[in-house]
Image (tube, rainbow, N blue to C red; front, side, top):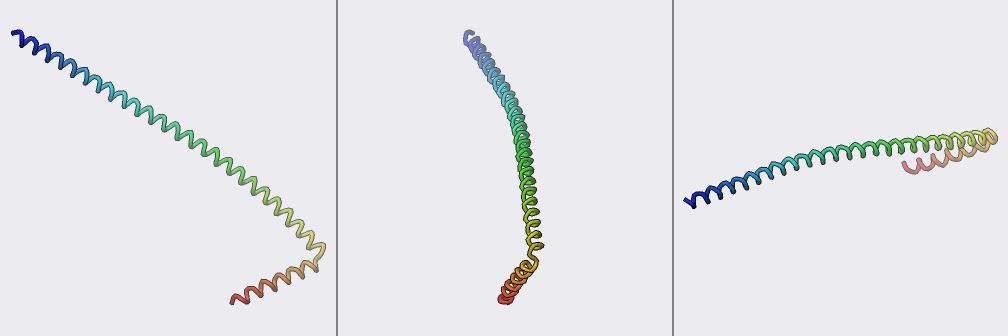
Length: 113
């Protein structure tokens, strides 16, 4: 029965190759799972880093806005003091200017109606 011995060897070889393929697929599945976990950790770290950067940029923008508001407030305070000084120095001229401005605004609104 030399033919049955060769069938047995051929069958055991196929079984060995099948087991090797199965082992390779199991290893591949484990590697893909590990890769997926690594990519998820990487994505999480990237998201945390971007959130930290965004907070930093937001903080810088807030600081810059507050600085600009302080500067504008100082300029407005200076302008108000200068205007008050001019009105105190020339009260009649200031009243005449305000009166003329009021008449002009009144005429503009009267024409709209």
